[in-house]
Amino acid sequence: MSQGTDKPRRPLSGLFRHSAIYGLVPAMQKVITLAIIPLVFKWLPAEQFGASLITDLFLIALAEILGMNFLSGMVRFYFDHKNENDRKAVISSSILVTSGIAWTFCGSMLFFVDELRPILLGRDTEGVSEGVLAKLLIIALLTVPFQLCTQSGFRYLQILKRSGTYSAIQISKMFLELTLKVVFVSPLMNLGPLGLILPVLIGEALTSLVVTGWALRQVGFKVNWRVLKPIVLYTLPLIPVGLCQLGIHKFDLRLLEAFSPKATAFTLVGIYGLAYQVGYLVNALMLGPFLQIWQPWIYDVENERERGELVARISSYAILAIATASLFLILFNREAIVIFTPKGSELRDGYVAVPWVASAYVLWALYKVTEIPFFIAKRTGPVLGINFIALALNVLFNWLLIPRFGFVGAGIATFSTMLSLAVMGMLMSRTVLIVHFELGRILATLGTVCVAGVIVVPLDTYVATPGEIPLGPILAMKATLLGALLWVHWRVILRADERRLLMDWILKRKAPLSSSDDADQ
Image (tube, rainbow, N blue to C red):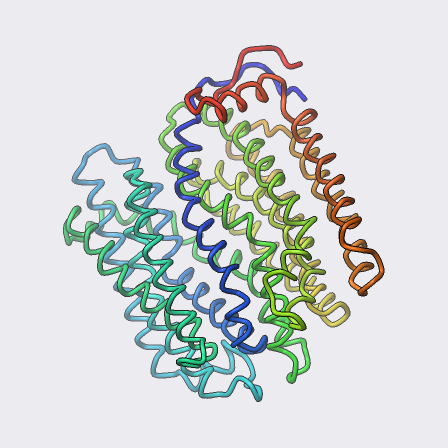
């Protein structure tokens, strides 16, 4: 499916290598998390798991408000300066201002915990008391400043392309937090939902001392308003963008709690929360790490025409890779959930929502690549408009669908929102940078994902009744469908020259994955 032959020859092996290294941490984290799920859910009821997810939502929201997008601005403007002292000032100013604002804001909120608790975390139930919710809120407020300090240090490592150091620290932090979660939730300490949140505070506090302390020793302790001012102006529209995107990703958890009967609200949040984590798996393993190195990499390309061509080509590759991995998740999620949850657990019901969520995040990946032209052009205003519309649609979809379909309605709402977001992003990004997205390949890729979802949702729903169809034939049917869709990815969507170069790169581990001048075949 040709999109022209005039393509840049910039090697992409370094981009993929760093992406793979950044992906190592979330991959290990997900594998280990899946391994301990049977233990955690054996000790932790679904409603307490749901309460911890609502706390996570607030924690992420506060981080977005107080500076996560500001750190993205730090990465963007670092490369605009050629003077080393100015580059150091970008880092030091961003770290000090972000941490100062975070500590001031979160410290003030600690005085109003009782008033904020029911608004931010929801209603208490028999299994989750007011006192537990209050403690969860306090831990979240203490965690956010440390988290922002940690992330600022990590962003500096990404700028320096120190992916090995970054991964080593992240892996150490991950093992510490997961070990503490098992200990705190187990009968040994029996901390309930606090056992899932408190280790995050401990991990962020220790890591921030190491990473941020190192970064400030490298760049100094000073705030330079001259280099900080353009970052602030660039970032201001991104703060509401971050909140809108958080709402798009996570607000359905809060709406599910609000629109469900009080007695079962946190239980339904727990069921959907597990389904969401499974559906989000590919995004966490592949898209996040890819964007961590992709943004600094593309910002370092100065030729505007080459930038546009690279954005178009890499977008096709990224969507195809994420869609390929998502097919496995969509088709076999029910079997995975059965393996990793205790027998008889209510959490197993979440398999119905996974295909909706997983498909939604392929569309989310498409949207994220359309954001790059806005960031390159330093025009963040349109991004705010797109995300605000998407958030409004998300709330509307959830309001319409949750009362009728329960947690599955939240999954359908997520899919519908991401579809709207991807379409708006594709249309609007072309107005700020000349990017000829390969629409034919992208639509063909999305089509395979939709086919998988359309077939597996009714199939898994039908076989949910024990004894309807034996497991063997079901797995054979799914494997056959998977093979057919992967064949489409390999033979129809990829060109012959791309297949040859990809195999070269995989087998020899030395040939740069770059475009060929060969004619499409």
